[in-house]
Image (cartoon, rainbow, N blue to C red; front, side):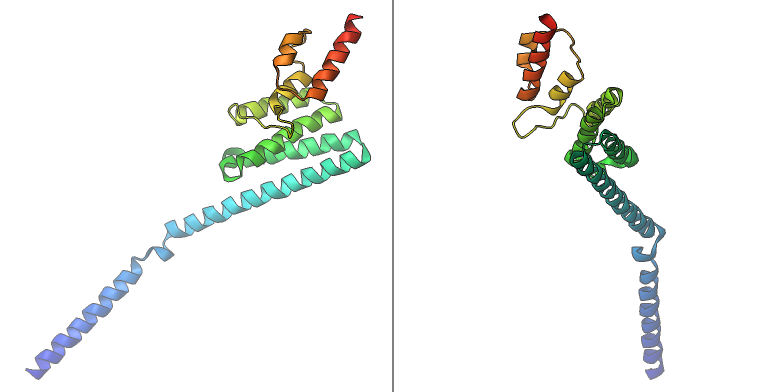
Length: 185
């Protein structure tokens, strides 16, 4: 009777140990899915870090261009900033949308400062298609996209009423009106 109890106890102990061991085998901590998930998260973090590094390099070029008044640095900054957006590809959702918008917007502005209006138009097309009609506002409340439309002359005919209705930078609208007066007289 005693040996039967010992045998049953040993059998129960072995069964418990085997059950615990099999539970460890089905744990998800060592599975391929868990490893793939961690690798994907690491890759996501790398994409965000690369975007931030790229953006900072573009901003450094922008500051250097402002200090030196070198048009070629404006173009280099614009190209660098636009490349930051391109490198995100289909992973753009990983970075803050407003930061990405500002990168593309500054790129368009710097293409204009550097004298490459065609590239500025391309950057604006990218801005408009990538951000589904969203806009940025300057500190004075004027619209980035409408200001760029005026600069890029989307409507070339002098129309005072249309210009008044656009939420572009006031100083820019004043310069456009001044240019129209010179053309008319």
